Image 1 (cartoon, helix red, strand yellow):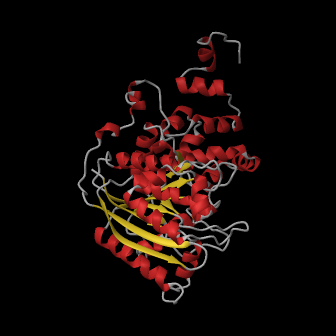
Image 2 (tube, rainbow, N blue to C red; image 1 turned 90 degrees about the vertical axis):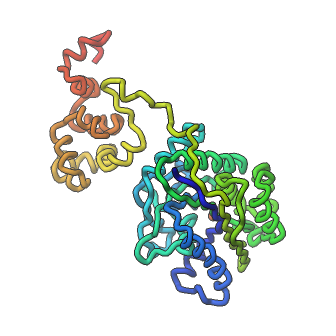
Image 3 (tube, rainbow, N blue to C red; image 1 turned 90 degrees about the horizontal axis):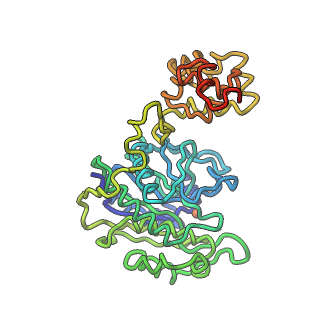
Length: 408
Ligand code: FE2
């Protein structure tokens, strides 16, 4: 069984990444910050968790206001670093854990936390500001990350209480995962800071100290606070500490704080806290062990429920069809089918399914019908003709089964 062995709260100030990349760890202005992360690094070296689940927010790097999810979980096999306007940081690709992430999504959605699911999105400083200070990575990262993105950039944000309960649901999801994984939950952001308007530069160390105390001993006080309370007490952008509540919600009441560092240099109170679970035994939380919504679907003939597993494993083929909504992609395919398939990186099997217009085979392989119909339009097939093909019937045979066979 998977188990949570502890939690970390960490600021994600982007300039930490800049200082890190420029090797300023020993500069007098930066040493208190970097030295302050070392015990957290050492704790992780000692505990060696397999997975870090990161509650973080994207700062309009991978998501934009055209579609900004309240909660979104990454289910990809790996993640790159987002280019935030100054080029890519020299960090290796970060492994994900698709199977574990899928299980978490299934479990949490079953508990009515309707997470969005993403694959092709890089992670920004919400993850990569603190991560290099927490994990070695010269030879690649020592474990996997499951990122859970939280909207803290466009109101209405999820409430602090919702984040706390999200963390509690995460714990139940983790404890129902059958594989023996040790997990640390990380919440990033804060503490006090404001970086817009005339109040820019606002800090309150007294409030930060109260927050640090409450997050350990009485998180429900923090969970009951409104966004405006966080803005008033800690500055506008400090409201992102609601992600610490998600982390805290995933921990039990039986924790001890094994490290704390607080350093306020310019505009943001940079903080790292490490909590260790006193009881790290695995327990089978069978209550939410499986999402029951599709139990038995395999017994319904001729039916292929499109799930996250299908979505991750067949993303290349689905993207190939999805791209056919652009004139350029359609034209490329019409000019040279084989070249278009090759350019899209399709396997031999996928290319053959496309070449043979094997509609049922494509569905069974993992194509979603709503992208497949774009391909059908391109090759001159109507949906009715595709339906007939999937049923193994001629067009006329299929129409004869309809209430109004002439409606074509
Ligand atoms: Fe932030």
